[in-house]
Image (cartoon, rainbow, N blue to C red; front, side, top):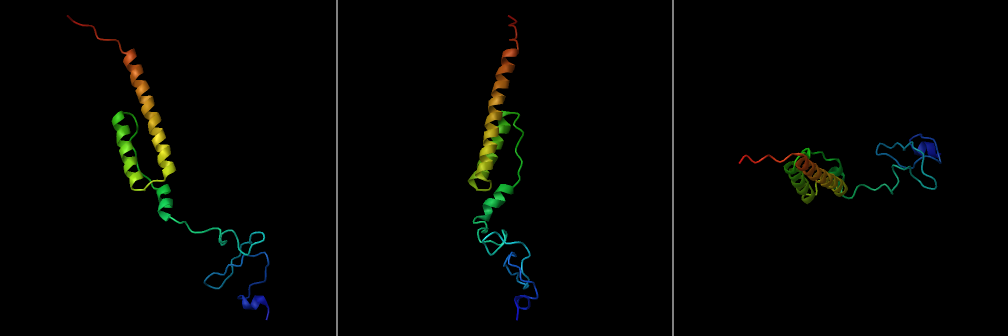
Length: 125
């Protein structure tokens, strides 16, 4: 008996992945060099250890547009809650915090510029 009859009449292919699906068919992808399996079925592709972290990277939520100090504070509060609950990827949280820091600094500069350009009101005594 040859290998084709043992493996559901699939031809012997030394360059084909050795993974067998539950329905008995063999994976048709080429295997990696000096390995028995393709990239997808190789054991180096382990499942995500903490799937919650993967979901945290894809979660969506809204922040206030940072046009005032109150809006920035509200956004900081929202981020704080999500960081504490581990609902947001730490790198993403860091980027958002950095953006809020820049917005806060820009808002301070804009307010100082506006104060210096506004002429003082004359005393009416």
